[in-house]
Length: 233
Image (cartoon, rainbow, N blue to C red; front, side):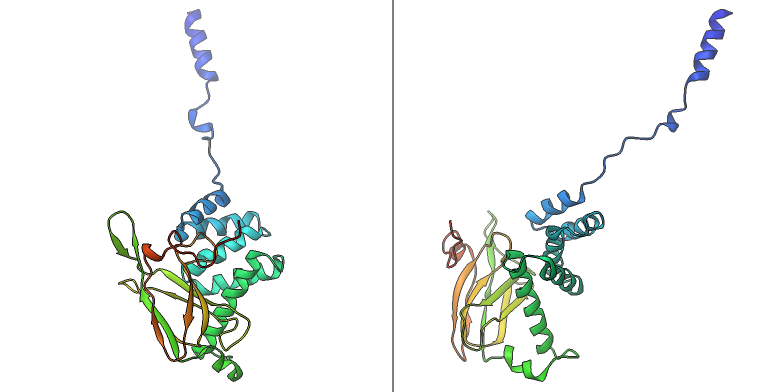
């Protein structure tokens, strides 16, 4: 009889297992965003950056990462908002500020060229020229040269004079890996696939007036074989 009382008493002291909250691991959205950013997984990086900014709204690196990710995802409004935040808060001579200024300048010029409301007539000839650069982009991933589809490529004017001064152009390849910059002023440009991460290509291009230059991009002229703008060691 005494044993039965002890058993009942012990059973009565036990708590239901459901009342114990399960252990949870909070996601480090900033860390996840940066990992996705490094592997250029923009679709994964962007939402992590947004969630990380809810906790750290003044973090420059998070705004910059979201701006880059949104630009690659063609989310124009978000990219413009985030790049503008970077311009307003980054050190004037920082790499982040430089990239943000270049992207915003290019976006504004595309607005002028497309005739969006508010475009000034005085700026209409600033972008337009009679030259071009086109080609096909392929990359060897171990199975042969494969066309890079919807791949972003940039053209940045270099030098302090001429009609192309300060110009930048940004475009994506089509479904066959082809790209084409049209109606640009003659001048000297940097052709690259990124100014933020390690690029596959970084070439100096001389664009002559009235000519449409053919420049294919592939392993044979990648930065491992040719780098016209090497970073200072």
